[in-house]
Image 1 (spheres, rainbow, N blue to C red):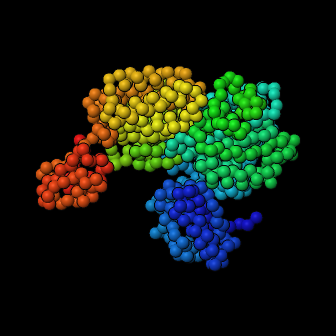
Image 2 (tube, one colour):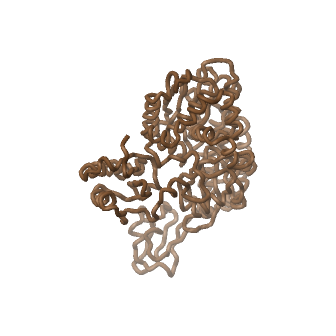
Image 3 (cartoon, one colour):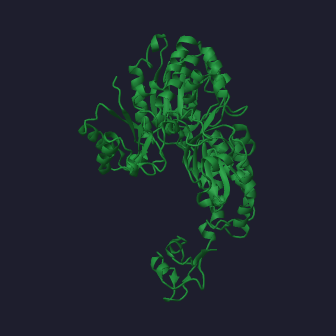
Length: 593
């Protein structure tokens, strides 16, 4: 095997690809050949290295230098400076030089990488890179040293809970499936990540697919399964491609298929693609889709561990759950249980989004507070504005105000506060956010994604959305709040699956914590946050306006009138509240009332 002086990881995340990462990669490889460095520098593709906001990016090891903002024209200079002269090409370096140790650890002191340990560090399409990081060692240990029951006991002792949202103990789910007498049995990975702004599963599948595959093989050995399926949404084409490459490589290395590692244990995997239906994240709808049927949920019991895919016992966990398993086997249940809280062990990946300075994917131990996530990991609120709320758990999670900032993040504490863990979405909202509009936005999403099978979800969410739209349009009326509360209660109690049962959560939590905003919209016909267009007016301040006519010339509907060097006026009936006038005014003479 060749020994290279340098290893260069080029980011091929979709954001970097859109900025020309493949062209940069090709130019770099050509320049390496031209300079006679082909035997000294290995060039690899990897998933996201940094934020990709200034891509294309590359990381050079062992130097630990992070280059950003590259073009094909920069490559000859970069290769000459760094690889021929041994000098860092400073003008392409990220603001802070990243050392190898810093890159392999966490970007902030609050983070611990378990699931994301290899992402951005290895070539996800090269199984040897994964094996070099102790990949498949856990599988080898299990097949040679442990009985299936012992594997389940290790997972039980670790306290690993399903990361798909419900938080059910993983070891117990495996135990139930192993106890089922029917055969064959199936192992299923739920990679149908549909929450708006969430990309935890995508990151792992694109950056470290073998960790998921290894976790699934171990699960299959534990429950007695010979066939597995990874259900991934079609909107993740890179993840699907990377998975299929990884599966084929695992087969070639004798890690999938017949007689794995000479153990007489057989197991194989197949990728199935979903068509983007959010409801297929629910396990019974997911199995129906794999079977080739319409993706609709079914009543439980029987649970999948007894009667699942094709009517046979099935174990379903999500990407993050399986990715934890190899590390638990290698480092021990006690190591894993040492992180987190009493009932929520280990770490959790979150997609941090919204009005926070540093958005992106993070991995933190359970028990960290919301304040630490927002201010220590996320850097605080954008433009140093005030914090208003954070929604946890995606579109079916609750919105928590500032009094919950010191809440420890785990399954039980979030449930007590009226929210959920979900798959890991965190949306931060600043003081200028309209909470009624937020409720409308999330209800619009869940209503659109309802499969329509059960009446409470199909009809009830539509009624809620109609009321919220009317309130945001300034047409709210007496009794709307009470009607919303009644509908939320009925839908939550009578819907067939988790989508309908959880759909009212944002509305309920916002009614609980921000009721005054609903009342202002309905009774005062006023949006306190000045967001809802029907409840605001753009006005020009007399004495501040210079009469420069810039606003009038840029108004798309000619709603602004006035003579040059005279204060102008905005016709409220003609104004469409697009905000262009405020954007182009150089004298801050336009305000929202």
